[in-house]
Image: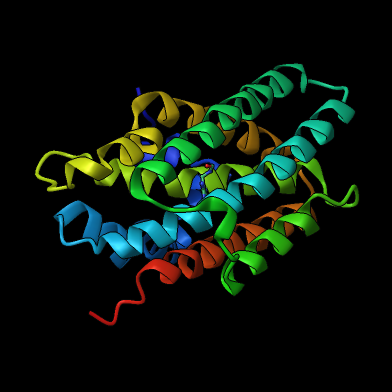
Length: 233
Ligand SMILES: Cc1ncc(CNC=O)c(N)n1
């Protein structure tokens, strides 16, 4: 029985990340319900914008692999209870191997020459930000929170394009499936659980750093979507 006068929420304490998602709800929605994502979902997406996204994201993912590898190293150095963590992160690295192959196949299907893609400034800025997080001085808790955030934005965005009532063009279904599928949703949940476990034990200062880092991730994600869709139409 729940104590009298207390709601379920007061009894079951929210996790650190859920608290942040409430506090920064509009910023989170800005990244996960961006006009580019909405245009995919409602079928009005401009294919030239999709091709820009494809080429830019391929470049991003190459840097992201190095970032995830750096998170793996941080997990391994925390010899405490992070044995399960390293396996979760390793499976993420393995999935990125398939993802790189998928980008190459997809680009060829859409006639995008990946070797000709020039990284645009928002993409460069995002990769530079990731590089900063790869530094050994950045705590594991901060890095794993960023990793969760980066994956969660794609999972949430693309799952939205697969929901009942969406009108996603068939050519883009596969891309949406890649990040919007349930298995990837569960993977993101494993990352979220790891991050929450670390955040609960972290110092106030470390927790604050992780929160600020997550906000930067969301900002970079919005700038990234903007490269393909600036909202002018
Ligand atoms: C800009 C951006 N953010 C997140 C992801 C998803 N992670 C790996 O694929 C991605 N591909 N690109």
